[in-house]
Picture 1 (cartoon, rainbow, N blue to C red):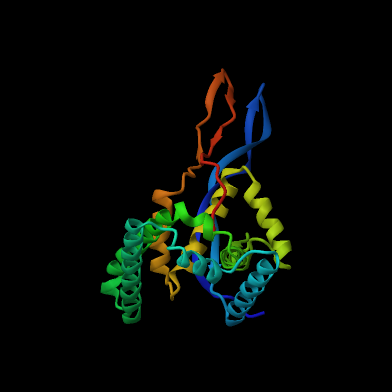
Picture 2: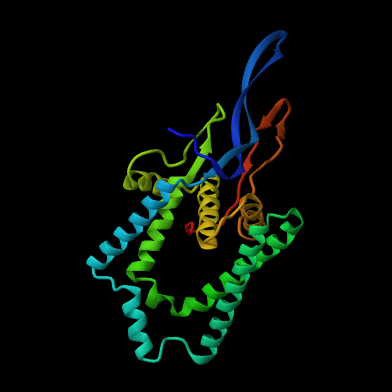
Length: 281
C-alpha cells in the first residue's frame, strides 16, 4: 500500500502513568520499591491527504446516502426550497438582507483566499491567516442566523447525507502515531459501520482526553470540508489556534504530591476539565 501523505499533524497532551523503581533504606535495609509516577505526554495525530480514490469514494458515499434518505421519506432540498419560495420564503425581509450580505461577504473572502493561495508568496501568509479567520467568523454568523430556520432544512436528504459524509471523512483520514513512530487509523480498518461503531465508543467515553481527541479532529475536518479549496499547513494552524483559544476547555494537569503524615505522601491527583457536549462535525 502506498504511503499516505500528511494533510495536517498535531499533538494533544495526555496524563500517563509510568512505573518508577527506586531503592530506599527501610529499617536499615535497602529495599527496591516500584511506584507509579504520573506525567504529561504529548500524543500525536494527523489527518492524511485524501487520494483520488478517496474523493471518488466520498462522492459515491454521498450520492448513495441521498438516495437512501429519499427512499426513507425525506424530501430533497430542491423540493423544499421551491415549496417555501412559492409561499414567500421562511426568512423575514431583515434577515434575508443580512443573510445575503453575509453570504456575499463570505464569497468575496473565499475569492480573496483562493487568489492569495495561488500566489504562494511567504509575505502574504499573514494576510491569508486573517482572511481565513474572518471566513470562519462570517460562516459562524451565517449559521447562527440560519439556526432559527434550520429545522426546516436540516432534515432534508442532502443535509443528512452531508453530515454522514463528514463523519465518513473523519473515519477515513484520522490517524494516530504508534510507539514506533508509524501511524495507524484512529478508528481502525473495515467498513463504514465497523469504523462508526468505534467512533461511537470514542464519542461516548467520558474521559476528557478521549473527548478532546474526537472534538478537535471533528472541528479540523469540518473546517477542511467547508473551505472547499486547497488548504495548507498554515491555514490549518490558524484555525487550530482558533479552536484551542476559543473552543477547547481541555487542560490536563498533575497536582504535586502533598504530605499526609511523616514518611508518607498522598498519591498525586490528576485533573482534566472539559465541558461535556457531543462533538460536532
